[in-house]
Amino acid sequence: RQLIEDALALARERNSDVTTSAEYQDLETMNFAYMCGTRDGRQAGLSGLWHTLNAVRAHHEETSSRLEDVYGALAVCYDRLGDSTAGMSCSVTTRAISITSRTE
Image (cartoon, rainbow, N blue to C red; front, side):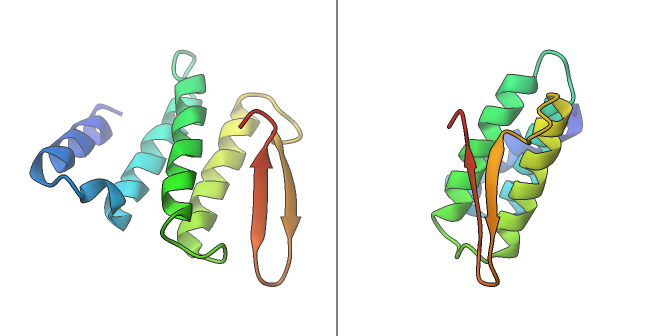
């Protein structure tokens, strides 16, 4: 986890717009997903994933594979939190995936 945190910190130092890059958001998603599996970081990881989802959603269509990655991380996070319903209501169509948190 420390390697991921160090990489995120270095990226933020290099460029102020880095947080909107696909690579940064991938790394951030991995970091928050990892946090969901730790006792002390579960809520911060979940909150961070929702923040990342909203940031990605602002720049991508609902059918984007970028969103799909964050949705997957959210599902794993809720599973780790013991929420058998994944804390979400999901609706899948041929054009889009829509997921909403009960706590968002």
